[in-house]
Length: 78
Image 1 (cartoon, rainbow, N blue to C red):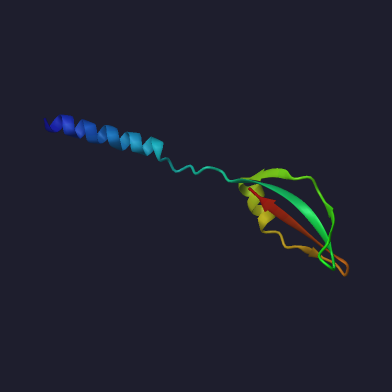
Image 2 (image 1 turned 45 degrees about the vertical axis):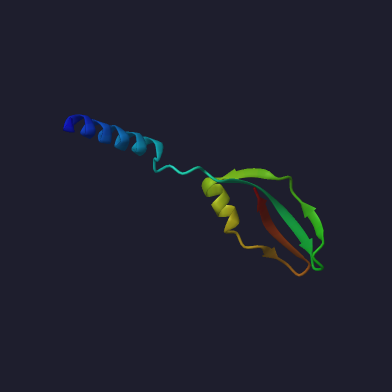
């Protein structure tokens, strides 16, 4: 009888190991570059493109590019 419980416990452990693997779902977002003038009005924007994983992380970590008359930054949404 103990063998049945041990086999059952082992089966549950193996099932949980595979079903709850260490891989997490990759997060993806739609991002575009937006250019604003000094009053905050959008003067240009690129078409949204899907970014995932490290590419998305890199974009989210970029600082805005600011000049005397414009600010260009990435904007992402789900």
